[in-house]
Length: 388
Image (cartoon, rainbow, N blue to C red):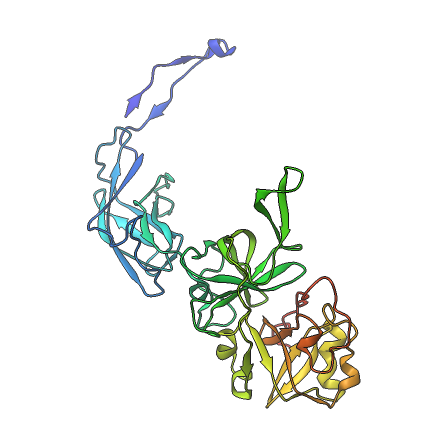
């Protein structure tokens, strides 16, 4: 224990008193994190993005205020950013040291392991001292690696600020809406998690690299077929649809790419949530589907403006009021349509087609096209727990 010299309270305007401040030189003041072995990824040659567990061998030492080893016993919290910890969330310092393996998944870019003295136990008060490992480099995730999930209502990077791998991929715009855009990675097979929705809040646009007519930077609308060279933002699940929100994006000078052909749905796929999840945000097409009759089938039309479409033994939903406003679905109840197609979205297990224009609905070609693009599906509230 070191005692600092007394401070005269008179110097502070408080006559007749003194104060001392006690500082414990053996208090935990620093944590030192080192690697026990070389991580396989570097900044120049990152390791592959992995959904499988990745192990990293680390050592942690406790140090006092003079950066000398401190023989203290303490439980430390463990975190991984970015990525998901795949093991115990704590390690225990014994006589001031710990050595072992931390396991994580979904690390990308410079991932770091965090250790913090933030756990209370017994009479010990945490110091909130923290330290991180050196960066553990992995490649950025592709659209498919963000989307791929066994649970169709979430995704591996939900909640992360994610940067998407675009530099060596062909990530192109497949549809543009009033408040977002749909992307497809043409480097991956169609319908294999290779599409994603980007929510931009308002009409998507960007600043062109060259100057405009009056010397200012030119503002451009996003076009179908534009290739992205940069994409980052908050990865989130909006009503069970994966999306990037608050995005930053940039486009290359490539000629517009052709829009991929729609993936034709069959009854087996339409009834399988996991199969439909592989197609989320893709352009899909239902052929020979019937618009059902009966008041029960049309409950969501009154509540959400989404009309039913029966394919085999399953019901899809279509939201067309924003793009095909002159099409009146109730007038066609009982009809079997040669095709209905659109961008595929999900609202808690209900699969919704968002037509881009009148040609996406058989028999609606004479309707005028709305200027604002595909509408965002309106939320379906979750049922009250315990309600039928």
